[in-house]
Length: 468
View 1 (cartoon, one colour):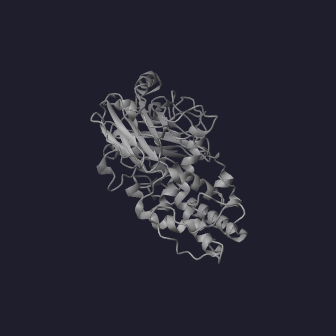
View 2: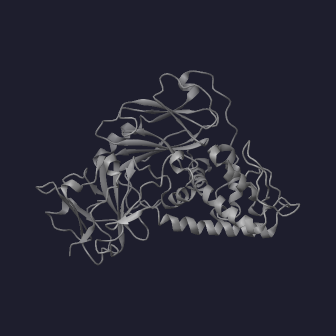
View 3: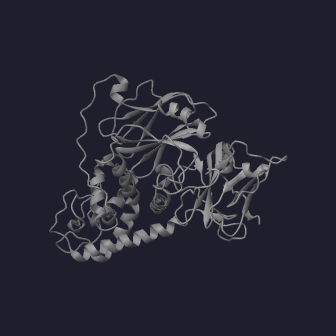
C-alpha cells in the first residue's frame, strides 16, 4: 500500500458494470474537488469502518508474524476470563471461546462439530470482513448433533458433497468463525476442553477426497496503523482489501461514488494528488468518526434504566442500507451476536435514574417469576467497573450470576432477588450476591438463545433498585 499522501483521486468505477462516477472533478486532474471530497470521504469511511476494524483484528490474530496462529486453524481459550483479562471490554465469564480466521481464496473449508449434550449451549458465529453474521452453527441454529458445515467465499462455484449438513456463503474471502461453549463452573472446564477438541477445520478437497486446487498466493498486507486508518490513508487499506470482498450488487452506486476519492484504484501514484483534496478527505474522516461515536450511543433505547439494543448486528440482508448502524455497532462491540442468538441489555442507571455506584449504594435486582430472563439456553448477569469496563477482583471470585449459578435461591413464589453490592449481604444471601465495584459500574445481562416471543416486543428487565 502507498502512504496516505499517495492518494490518487480517480473517477474510475470499482466493480465490473459500474458506471463512471458523476461526481465533478478538478479539470484535467481526475480529483474530486475539495468540497465534494469531504462529503464522499465521510460516507465512504462510515461504510468501510467495519472492514477496517475486522482487518485490525485479523492482522493481529492471523496475519502478523507475531501471532504464531495460521489461517484455517481452530484455537481455544482454556480458562474462563476474569479480572486479569484486559484485552477487550466486557469479557464474558460464561463460555470458553474457540476461534479461527479462515482463508477461503483457494477453496472452502469444512467445519466439523461433535455431538454436544443438549443441556450445554454452544455456537459458532460466522462473520465476514464487513461484519455481517452470515451463518450460525450450534444449539439454536443447527442443533446439538455432530455435523459438517461448508464455509465458502463469494466466488466459489463448486458443488457441496452429499455428507455436508449445511453451506454458508460469505461476502469476503476471509472469515472469522467464533465459537462459544458454555461452562457450568470452574470444575467443568475439562469437559468443555474435550468438546473443543472435536471442533476441526478441513479443506473441502481433503474432506471430499478430490485434487486440491492451487494454493492462494502469499498475502501482501501492511500492518494496521490506527493513525493511518483514521486519516486519508484509510483509502489505501480499503483498496488492499477490496480484491477479497464482493459487496452487495445493489450497493454498486455507493462504490461508484467512493471512486471519486480513489477507492477502487489499485495503482495510486505518489505524485498525482492535490493537497487541498487530501486535506478535505481527512476532514471527512474526522466527521465520520464523530458520527460513528455519536451513533454508538443511540443504537438502542433506554427503559427501566437498561440500554436495549435489538438489531445492531445481523446478516447482509438485515444490514443493507444501514452503514452508520453497522459502523456504530463495530465501534461499540465488534463481532456482536445477532439478536436471535444472544440479547445483551446493559444496566447503566438505577430505578431513580442515577448512575450505579457501589461506593454510595447497595442495590437489588428483583425478578418476579413471570419476568425472569427468557432464555432457551441460559442467562447471566455480570458487573463491570467503569470506565475500564473490566471485571474486578472480589472475595468470592464471582464474575457472573445467573440461572446456572450453583446454589442460587429463588423465593417460594418463583421470584428471584440478586444483591449487587460491595460488601456481603449476609451469609444467608451470599448465594444470590454479585459483588460490585467500590465506585461506578454497570451491568450486562446476557440472554443466550432468547425466547423468540421475548424479542417482539423486546424483553425489558426490571429496574435495579437501591436497597440501603
